[in-house]
Image 1 (cartoon, rainbow, N blue to C red):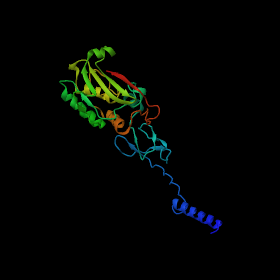
Image 2 (cartoon, one colour):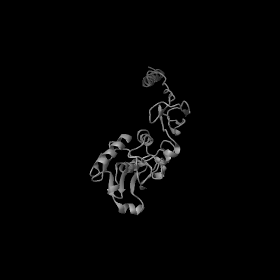
Image 3 (cartoon, rainbow, N blue to C red):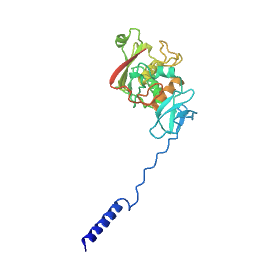
Length: 268
């Protein structure tokens, strides 16, 4: 065999080998182009569809969209098949959710269930408060002798923050996530289910309401003993549809989320 014939045979063998490696010589196909996300706006409280203006209207996956609808906070988040809109007024939600009692005024909440050490002699009121709070947030809240949330009678601790304080909640944060609470009440005779649930509301991430009829309104004599529907809307949005670090009025967490550990006290 001549040298030229040998070279030709080698070239044919190499070509065959390359063709086999490339799937028999077929040309690789480009990956399919992602389809736009079909976005539907939904009421975060009722679960019903909402007529909202979503921009951009046909977003690609990973695109940030804005949803606007009357009676709801403007929502900014990454495109998803469902956008759960927050019903309510900006000022009301800011007072309850984005208050000065949360780091950076971001939404702050627990990311897991926790246990509560209640006040001796108030087991029934504590159990009722836990049941209401658990139903509102979806957290499995239970009593424990060594709870991550502690109720105490401690007038000296209250005097350290305000001689007029009847109760206070010290909230421990890691970034925008609540990690623990200590709730102090000035006197045992003042304790009611409403007082316990009000302070537990602070522990869950709520501030003070601007509505006098709400449980979270700051008042010495509290006629309301449970959360109103408006307050339940806030807790549902916080725990079912939003993450710690959500920014006012309603933008998903980003680089602005609060960091570090700290304790902030809410005084009543």
